[in-house]
Structures are given as C-alpha cells and as structure tokens.
Image (cartoon, rainbow over all chains, first blue to last red; front, side, top):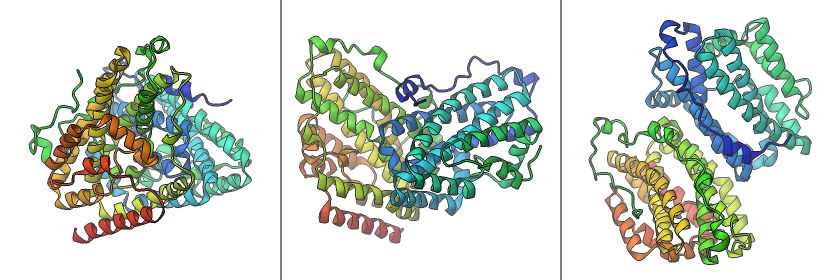
Length: 264
Length: 309
C-alpha cells in the first residue's frame, strides 16, 4: 500500500510521556542491564540527525515526499531520545548535549569520511543508490520496532513498557515509509537490486553498531534477542527484508547476531 | 504589530555563566523543541480568499517565500556533512527549525492553493543551461564540504551560524514587509504569526554567531571570506536572478538593507562587508565559467583560512 505522506505529516507528533507515572521508578527501578540497553537506544535515537545527513547527500532529498518525511521522522526520533533520556535521568544517568557532542567527536575519521563516501556514491551511482538507503532504513526500522517491543515485554514495567510501546508505534510508520520506498525503487531497477543486496549482505550491522562500542552492541543484542522468543523476532525481521524485490534468501540480522555470538 | 527584527541579544555580553563554555547558552534549545509550532492550517481561514483574493504580484512573492522556507533540506545537507553535525545542541535546534520551516512553507502553500486560478510565474525557475550547472554544483557541494570543512574543523560552525543569522534577518524582514503592504486582514495576520515563529530562529543564530565569532579569530576570518561569496537569502541559489531581484525590490527596503548590514557590522570580525547591499544590487552568480571561478575562489578562501589557522 502506498505511503500517505500528507496524512503522516499532519499527524506526526512528539511522543508524549507526561501522563505516565514516573513515580513508579522510585519503587520499581530498572535493572542495570536494562539501563545499559536504554542508554544505547537513546544514543541511537539522538544520532538520527547524522543518519539524515547520509540520506541528504543522495539525490533523494529533492523529492518532495522524501524531504517531508525526513523532516518529521528526524523530529520524532529526537523526541524518542528525549523520552529515553528522561527515564535514564530518573536513574541518575545524565544524557546532555555536551556529552552527546563528546561521543560524536570520539567517532573520528570514519564519521568524517562517511558523508564523503555517501556523496560520491550517491551522486555517481545516482538514483539506484537511493534504493540502498531506503532498504537499509527499512531493515533498521524493522529492527527498532522489534527491539522496543522486546524490551517492553521483557521488563513488563508499568511506566517503561507503555512508553516503549508508544515509541514502537511511531517506528511502525517509519517502517511503512522506508519499506514502500524500497519496494518501489527496487522493483524498477535490477541494478538497484544488485547494489542493495551487495550492501546489505556485506556491510549491514545492527542499528547503532557504527556509533557504539562492540561490547555494548553485543550486550544489547544478547539482552533483547538472545532467547528463543528473541530469535523468533529476528527471523521475522529477516523474512520482511527477504520479501523486498531481489532480497530473497537474505538473513542479515541472524547472520550479524551469530557473528557476535548471540543465539537462543 | 510585528517588529522587523526580533529582540536583539546584548552585544558582546550574556547573562549566562555558561557563556564562555557554551555558545548561545541563554537560548534554551529544549524549551524551543518542546514548544515547536507545527501546522498552521487549523487556524487558517482560506475561504476568505475566494471573495477577497490576493493579487498575482503578492502571490508570486508568497510562492517565492514558500520555496525559500522549503529549501531547508538543501542547507541542512551542507551543514550536516561538516563538523557542525557533532554539536548536539545545534543539531537539536536544527531538527525543530526544519520542522517549523516545513509548516511555514505549508501555510504559504495553503494560501496559494486557495487561489486556483493563480499560476506560478514561469520566470521563477532556472533555464536549462543554468539548471545543468546548478545540478553539477549541487552534486559537488557535499563532496567539497565533506573534505574542506572537516579539515577546517569547528570554526565552520561559526560560518553556518552567521549565515543562518543573516538569512533569518533577511527573510523575517521580508515577511514583516509583506504583512505591512498587505491590504488584507487575514493574510496580514498569518504573516505576522509566521514572523513570530521565525523570531526564535533569528535569535538562536544571532546568539550562536555572536559567541562563536567572538571566541575565534580564525572563525571570523573564515566567515568573512565565505559570506563575501554567499548568495542570500538561503535558497536564492535555486531561483532565477529575476525572481530574487523582484524579492529584494518588493520586500527589502534600503532602510532594511542598512539595518541588516549594520547588524552584520556588529558581529565580531565582520564589519564593512556590506553583504546585503551587494546581495540586493548584484545579479546572483550563475553557472558556467563564472560559477567555476566562484567555486575556485571559495576553495582558495577556505584553504587560506586553514593555513593561517
């Protein structure tokens, strides 16, 4: 089904959390390993503006729908970061702008060269490269929905779980955009299919793996997906990706978890 | 009555203890994000234009202003490939800024749509040759910025801030001027409302540029060199020279030019640029040899600044 951009922009809003009972954390605080996973997710959400950069250097930013989506998507993700930062703050973990800046500065040359690589590929390969971005985005958003739902279920916390469900709900609309964009673009071009398959198979890693320490990535993946139920979610994400035109048989999420020693 | 310029920050001083560490610290980015202004459509009375339409000259200006507000993404792209993207306070601002600008453009487009017989002026867009050069330049730009701006480092943030400030001074003055000229109550009220939204954008960039230019002579030097080559307002680069000339002629008076040039003069290291006077009077540079010469000039300016630093 086509993605209705006007409906999306008109109904896009910052995730609300004021009505939730945050006092519950005083009597029922979150355990250490959950806070570590939340911190990871919070960093990823705040980092969306840097992913946006990679999309903007491709020719896609000139398309009206893409540009409108990116404006709203970027803001929704920023507010996911704010919501998670609020929860972390109640547990004595401060996430402020200066600390985020320090983290971004630590990323070094790989981060600096990222946009250069993206602009060259985006502008030399052209529109087919946009399909790679959209498919990559779809894989990431499917993973994000699964991650939030898993954590909501694992914790079953009266405040955290509804908050994570709300965030996951917004992420499902991001999935709808990326997946419909990816499908349309892949259907139109065999070259785009080959490029996308190559990129996903060789370069995809769990969301956040490009900005976080490897031990944090492994912790989060084990925490959320290192069980039979977790692996069921992983297989579901992979089967969604495999349904995109030309991506038949790909199991990139299961493969990347296996590489990190995560299993049921 | 909406003022032509937003409240000015005190020159060279701030009431915040954190000022030395955090540029523009008195602007609360989180509060700005929390109180972002979204769609203006629920409060718009569009039916009024059926009985009391705007004239084509005004609608041309509305279309131009809408395109400027929509050009955010292109500017954002150039900004985000540079070290500016590391500054989480600035990027948090950019997220909401882009959102508010999207809805400002949307409100203007709603007014245009309420005039079904209006057709956008054909002269508003670039010709085929200009489009070719333009598209080439647009492709090269992020590659250029990724390399040069990353080599320069954090001083680039000051350049983006100063450019952002001047852009907001010009565009906000245009909204206010169009409101003053409009003999249409509903349209005037909308423009005043949109100018209020833009006041916070103006304040953010003004504070950022004041503090960042003050703390680094290299940043001032770079800002001076880059602004001297900038095409303002932002987004004018995608417009035909005629459309931009009409914009200045209709909405930016000589007094406003003098006021804005005066404000630029007050920014550390930027005195005497006469940037607005030049932008309003000169024909914007286009593609071809002139475009290439301009690009070489910009690279040379960047590299000189880098060497001096």
